[in-house]
Image 1 (cartoon, one colour):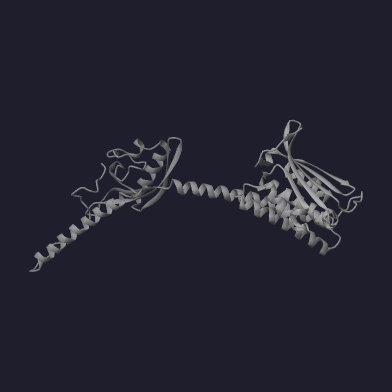
Image 2 (cartoon, helix red, strand yellow):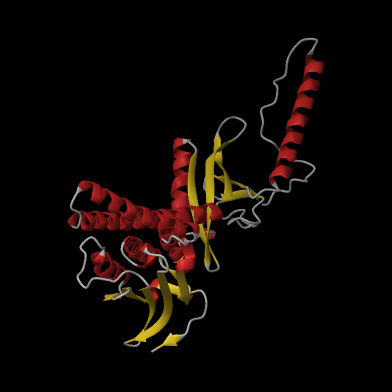
Length: 366
């Protein structure tokens, strides 16, 4: 049966004062009656308070048949549970598990707590169940008393947190692999330790800047324009007045964000040291557009320097050519080309569409 907290009478099983002898019996008996009535009133008030919560109460006899339920409207317990067992209410596995645990409580007379999952339509609901033995006035175990409260939202938050932690672990490992690769590549092309430290610190700082953008976007990635500003503007004496950006702005995946950021860093450092950003009037033009190649759509990112010092034909090992031509394109699954023109270099990077999503509409060029 379902208990009504507004009922005028409710049998609360609490020990009453024992009869006393002597001339004070009447007064003490009256006080005991008042105490009993007060306990009943408190019990009724407590039930009324519980009726406004999500906590359900239930009782079962020694055969684990429900004798009453309270406040079960929003729980897994039906209001007509009286006389029924868990096997009549729950699915096979859930019913068997609940029955085993409750029988163990009856055997050991120790409380237990467990989580119960039920299927509601196309979703799963979770409940936190606590059970303990119920006793008669003489102390004999008569069955089980239990509580049930829904914890579905809590379980979903826990799953979300686990997913985020797994994702964080995955990304941390990727980031450490990138740092290890950068350390090896930087050491290979550095002559002295101070030279290595300067270049390595710059590349680590570049990763940090890109990572900040990715984190601020809730790990969605980084928009290309933000990467350009973050990685290039600080190396241009006249700021973004020396740097032009045109074309499609996109959201790059977290992996692409870190590697494109590295490429922009290498290009900007070289331009500030030897290229168009090292002289007055020099400019860098960055363009991005969608292109189609072999029936696949790519983002074509182009870096073009103009009005800079005359470029030598031979390659400088200090310049991060391996980062630009090998590490970055391999990491994003694309292609790259680095060309040396008379007044500046030209770098083209193709990024597959699995690594970005468009923010604004772009023109598709064949």
